[in-house]
Length: 606
Image 1 (cartoon, rainbow, N blue to C red):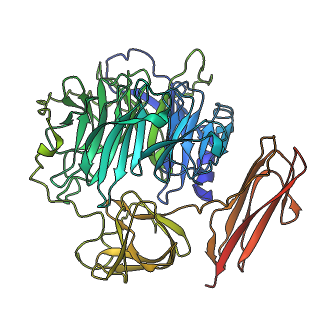
Image 2 (cartoon, rainbow, N blue to C red):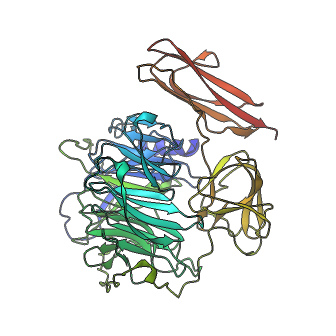
């Protein structure tokens, strides 16, 4: 979050942020709502923070950690730590609630880790003893402490489109991007005779889709996903035997879905009507809450959740927490159909709430003791939800190729620019509140942009130079230019090729700014727990702009930045006027040996 917004957030937290808890159904809940909800709050520019909501006391705290919008929040199964992706392609851990619900309401017990590889899409191994993450599309496993290359185990599965892990023994739902830009979805499981996750074996394939909007894997190796298809958006449930059936016998655009802890139900946030009027179900259409019974293949709607955007189950499977578009939290009891509305006043900040995950305390890991906040005046109770009529289950498919596309929707445009569709930038993504990249930025192709076409000029009819896969990196050298409905940037690839790419479609971004790769530092062999990280937030700037140098060291006796002594965990804002190299020198405590790391900032003329 930028400085101004962060200050506003801190002021709200320190001034006693209040939450109103009122029940919208007369049915008594089976047990009091308890637990900690971790979620991501991001503003229109994509600056994000992680927040904690304590349901018992209705208080909010914030983590003091740099994160991205899709931070992949995940509580350790034991409840001892919260893992999340950071904005420098590493990951972080919240190790206790120290400071979270004190006077400042800032969680201070966080550690930020930088593995030897850039980390994406992080999840806990089901046994809670290791973390799984993607590095350049490959699945890897590391202990939750500070990782070294020797600690990281390679799992020979390519999941460059994302993954989910569950079950015991381990099962992995893997999305792979094909050369055509489609998404191939497969499930891998660990054979009974296997002793290592590296022995994961192919179990079954669900299918090949233009895109996948949401997915999850259940406790028994079953899988569910929301899909984009030529005939209309939909979704599938696949039992552990690999047989797939439709989640609904009607068209539905799925924003989020999650298995209940026992695998008996799937909670789904999905849109069933074209509220945006663009003749296609897609992001932007108003969504509701649905529950899918994996035993009967029946889908029912839970009333009262218009505008739903994200969800999570309580770890005991009793409740579903739903987030709506106006940043309101509501808890649904599937047994009694009771709805408890939790009015979290985050609308006072320009914030979008996502990625919730629910922690319940245990005897071994009790939740913090927090004074109960004085409730505000109760608002008007919400109307009682009415059960949605039970739908006739869709017939189970015997084979995926026999699926019949829905005929009523106009085919979704390609994820890369196709034929000319007018002038201006009317087909560029408008949800970010600003430009996604700037001249001098290091950027990469997003999952949505896989197969992005590099052209000789900013036009759909210009000569195609190459197709860029997800994760392909580039330097932004000029732009933007509006042409034939899209917003174009001139870019330079790592191999020197220069051309033009469009940056987005109405559904989202095709390219985005990323942190540059951190300098590779080889440590002098010693026996102590040495660690050194030295990096900048930008490596190419224009005269008049500034950068932030950051460093994190451990196991040292002395630290010097360009010859001046500094502390081991700090940063500096610097505004260089010419290309310059900064040097960080450390003296290791174990043997007094010296090491130097360097960062070069290229400064271009305005």
